[in-house]
Length: 196
Image 1 (spheres, rainbow, N blue to C red):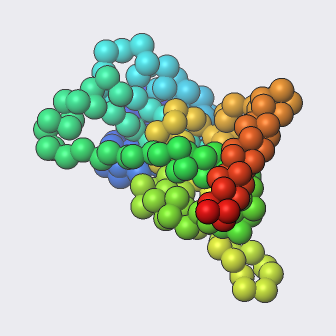
Image 2: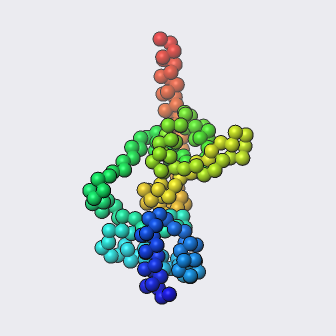
Image 3: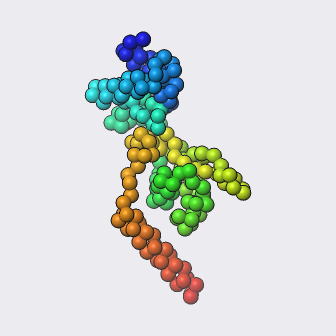
């Protein structure tokens, strides 16, 4: 199989399946080693970016998927009359950030970081397909471990979670100060209510 045939085969597979397919599976199907398959996929990614096409090829943690380019989403929406709308409130974004940076993580750990119950936010993220169960912790009660999904990577334009922005020491201290300030305001508010 020459390179053009391999590219055509990969394109047909990804188009037909619709989901992400691992590089190992693609290499097996086109009867090439992983390194050769990776080179073919990288060439395809470059070609999709250069050409005026409505789709592009993305990598998601060692798997590949064909997706609509963002600039053509409105046309797809018109054709299907469907809109998937995520309402990411500050609470949901905060919870998603904790899961993304700390995964796999339990709900209890998320709540310790946030200082409040997080059931609703975690459930919303699961509903939106941005977070999923990644297994269970091997401790009493076997709490569920949560982590991000391929949909999270796709929606935030990441190939892997390693692409998440690194939070520097100054940013971390600023966040800590903000949280302490909010907690103090909340405490003061609760104290005022008790005096009445």
